[in-house]
Image (cartoon, rainbow, N blue to C red):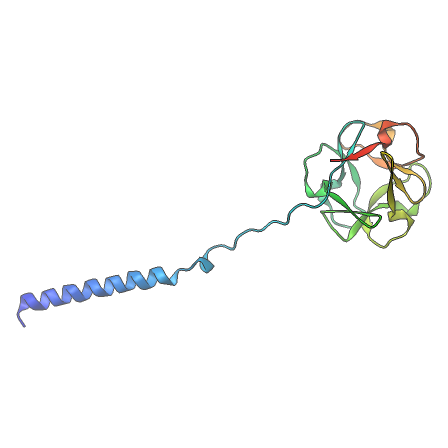
Length: 170
C-alpha cells in the first residue's frame, strides 16, 4: 500500500467513525428524555356569583385545609371559585374532599361559613330555593352587611328580600 492510499484509507475510516458517532448520538436522544408534558386537570363546575355585585364565592387563598374561609372576590374562574354539587353537598376544585359548611352546625343568624371535610349532615346540605342557596337549617347564604367589596365575608341569615342573598351560577 502506498502512503497516499494509506492516508486515504485512514481518512475514510475517520469519516465513517465520525458519522457512526453522530448517528448513535442522535439515536440515543429520544422524546422520553425530554421534560414530561405538563397536564392540567380541567376545572370542574360553575362559579357561584352574587346577584348583588356579580362577585364570586371564593375559598380564601385556595386554601385546602379544614376550616378554610370563604369570601367574595372578583370572578376569575380559579379553582377556589369553581363549585359543583355531589348530592346536596357543594364541593370546590381546590379540594374535592371538602364541602361548603356552616361552621359548628350553628343554626343562628350570622353563623360563619367555611370549608370542612365532607361528612354529611345539615351543616353541609344545600338546596336552591329560587335564587337563594338554602342550608338544611333553614337559613340562606348571605353576604355580610350587604358589603359589595372584594373580601366581603359570607354568613348564614334568615331568608329575606336582600340582594345579598341572591345567587346565580356562571
